[in-house]
Length: 335
Image (cartoon, rainbow, N blue to C red; front, side, top):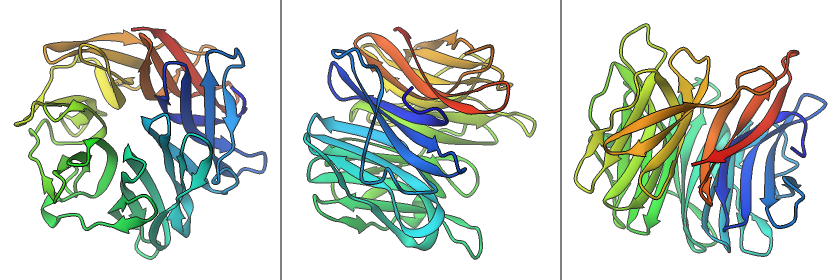
């Protein structure tokens, strides 16, 4: 990788050749800055760091990249320090332009994005109030020039929006978890946001990523805790246009961090229940099969993002060396 220390959180293909990935680059002085990297399989140069308007921002990170078209890409993230914006930049096919997301003043925050078109996107996440340490959800809408605050329905009971997905202006999803530590989902139909019931799968849990092929084929993944001692089992939910249903996952599969569409279903990346091994789940509504992610330099590969590109599973994350230094990680294998 073109930077030595830090991690990657998300990855997405721009087209059949170019791939974007985002994360956090650790500085020599101990600071952290958002980082965007790009790979074009036609030039043989591998991953290259790409400058964005947020590149020099201290105590900040990118955690999400979403592609609507080759001329419409968003990278968004958050900040550990108090301020009044979360980092966000937009690619118009020629250059990256700043479009930072307003957050309440003097609050740390983190955001995720769903790109629809050059004139429409949604961002959702969290912000933390310094005085109390309380976390609250935050939702914003982009109209091509400005981010506008959008009220979250009280009935949605969202404490944190962890991911967003959109297939059209009238088909947008936001997922996360509520104040009772149960997974939550809400849907936008072009007019209003409405909470959508989810099956109860355990004592606690959360949803962490979502993908959609269309209004009748939506997938969300995360974690469910079966008892007070549980570190988390894989939670895989599918929406068929009418209701969300749980899809059976292998019992040894734990928390899932990211999910991508395949021609016949999904592939998701996460870890096993005791958090000793990273893994990939692949399958459809009939069930999922499991394969492990190889260790790197004899150490566990921590995988955070996944994309399926030209028949290959591409994952990003990080790996630690024997001294505890964290380095960015990219890996790929055949689907």
